[in-house]
Image 1 (cartoon, rainbow over the protein chains, first blue to last red):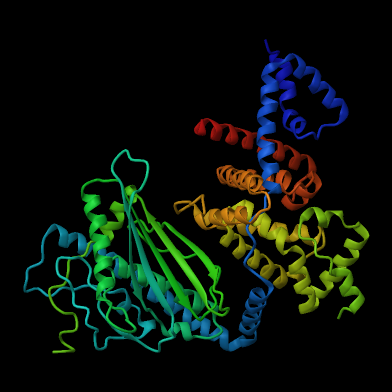
Image 2: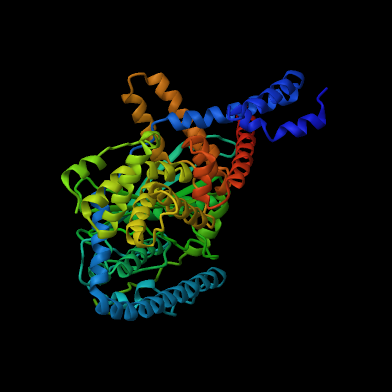
Length: 351
Length: 216
């Protein structure tokens, strides 16, 4: 039977004993107690197990770091160049921050209006003759100087959910992005996710702010806004985006099919998981700021960003993944439910 | 500007913390003073040497705290960027390495604080895939496999500890720092550091036991 008082006295020293960090006298005292107390012996064994795990981890080879001095030197030079900009940069920043803040407020307002609008639409269908007032994130963000241009042949697909349209954003910087949608579903009580569909959309998104040299704030916000636009597009929040190259109708269809399948699973209450991965490639150096992408009505996000260095050096790849489990899929769909437009958005421009 | 001989003196590349601790204190002191002076003067060679000298331990520290390689890379770069920018404010109350670890820990904490509003992803598939590839290249694949599994398990357990305990476990049990060093990093008394380490070890034991119960 363990001696409780003695056990309590010795308890604080067991961790150090297991780690072999006790002085000789204290060690002898613990030894004597352990010889009599099985309970404390088990405790020491538990400690030793935990310590052995950490010792094993300390000896393990961890993955090599991908960051190197050249990358840091480039960042330091950029920071120094920014400081050298001095008065001009400060003036630019002073001008830019209010404009970005204003743009962000406008975008948030648009999102809120959009969410409310979609909910209302779901509750009460719009009359056919009423023109939709589909708010767009891009059109509210004046700092991007978006002009609508000749659309590509991406016709809105009625009854399939969000439609993707075209616009020109000047000047193009060559930044590209792709949305990869991985959808998995499984039967209830199954332990694996047997069905996997790789449904991807390739997009090009761009912003004049990307061209704004030497201003990390502008670049960072630009990058963040770009990815937000991309997710907004995925969520049906945005109907204006530039497409570079041939029309991407098949991709659009696959994208919509993925959303449709996920929605169907949601309706059937099947356990499902939707992963949206945004991969952006740009010329600008990426900052180490986290991206906070609003993916539900409360503004929370399930975003993980990984920063990868491309083999060709000066280009960087940014990956943003959002996982939507069965629990939060509902909130995702409540945001992205989108009634298709009944008219071509550029009908006025291209009669 | 450093002379060639002095550069050679700094050029010891000690990838691990153990190697660094093994250096004689006189050499380290001299080196550190010169390194700090070079950093303050903005000498690119010295900055690069500091980066090469402490980069791997800082990355390792961030990796165990965050459990994610890309994030650890980010934190490593940010640590050196901030350190080089604010080297003028370094008061030499601790070693340069300790100061860097403090910066790194703060940055890791900021990262984890930001994560709280998100769904925390505890297992990085890319990192796990790399363990697997490391195993394939190893001369003794079975032993390497065991080690990689140990690392995965350790990372899993660490990610389930509160940040303060995680930091202490990493500092004491993985990096092998003594209580004096931990006290310098945490900015507390030696006795406090010791007490916190013991408490963190107890929490670690509980987590490992919980993990074993889950598994079995």
